[in-house]
Image 1 (tube, rainbow, N blue to C red):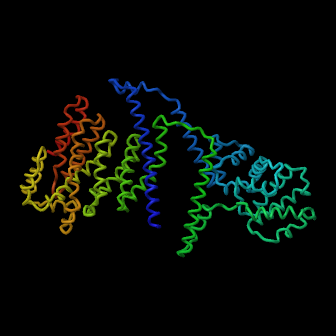
Image 2 (cartoon, rainbow, N blue to C red):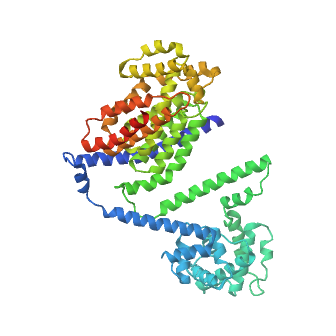
Length: 566
């Protein structure tokens, strides 16, 4: 049951992450469709883009986002060093310099650490005292009983651990309560309320039956009414006042001291779950009560911050799931997550995120890892197919990441030779080359003739690259057979044939990456390869129909590589 529940939770979590990315991708696709409909028939794309209505809300959104980031940074500083954080917030105009303005900020800003607020208010510094007085004076305890007033007072912050700080806060609270209830007639003076408040704090930490006797004579030598004290006791017994630092704070303090005891570790894990639950509950409550304006996303600047926040945990979850799990349903969700992550990074022009997703995916193909081809599984084949699909569908956005795609294609060709049994030695070269059909036949024949003249078996070629040893050849042929499937071969061909549809800038990035990886092939000391050199000829042929300006940029890269190869 436990394993089933864990699997269900993993699948649910991965599904939520993929749905989150799917929403970002769908939003962009809808915007692109709308834009195409608005400007259909315009010959000049740049002219259409220039006529797009400029949205002042974008600039307003960016400005508000920058202010929010500054505010969050100031709150983070306040949680570490309150005075430094307060100075930062004042410098950027979020908080005034008067004690009443600072007190109002501490009262209303829900994101502040309650423990830090309590320590700050109880500080003996004279300016802190003024802030504390202004803070307490903001409360209205009129017509409220004493315990409910104390609860309201302690909801906004956590009592500090130092007795003197608690003393200052309780003294001011008692004074404010008496000030708000002058006609109550229960307390002879504010000192009585102060002692009673302190005793309630003690009762909360240690509920005991001697509470009534403990409070004898505190009202200027007289006793408070027993029914009042009994009512206070029953109230606290039924619903204690929460004054702990919270599970998260307790967790931090315990982590440094926890040992290897299994019981301690379980207790720590339970504390962490409690902390997560409390955090989630508080976030949901604050979100439901928030009065912030809702902005409908109409521009990339609205969506990019969302992706910036979620891409790192998404990538980590997909990577761990794809690496560790052989559950088809689980790793399929991870593959889908990689596809959506790459697509979102591409359309949002997020270079760092695109690099991270594509390079991680390239590693999961196992094509560029030494001595890892024998571990090829179905999920790795799917990673190869996905990388090829990205090259075909998102080629206009890949820029420098074309190198990752082309490098995997280069290594894939070697894997296909092994998987189809063409790696058993030079004596099978002629028979193997006769099986090659179409435009690649001459290239394959030249490839094998080169090894035959040099008397270098293909196994030795693979050994020289660190990707194969003799004992794993049979295993490799079984594992890599799928790399020669019709779907994979066609996907590779589509990338090169479809290069003619790339934009003017994208085709330059594509041929530059093609030349870079081809140079790596040619520079292999044991057995230079010409696979990508032949593909470069094909790409040049497919793109000869481009306008002269675009073709000149392509030929500058291709011609230089041909000169180097020759």
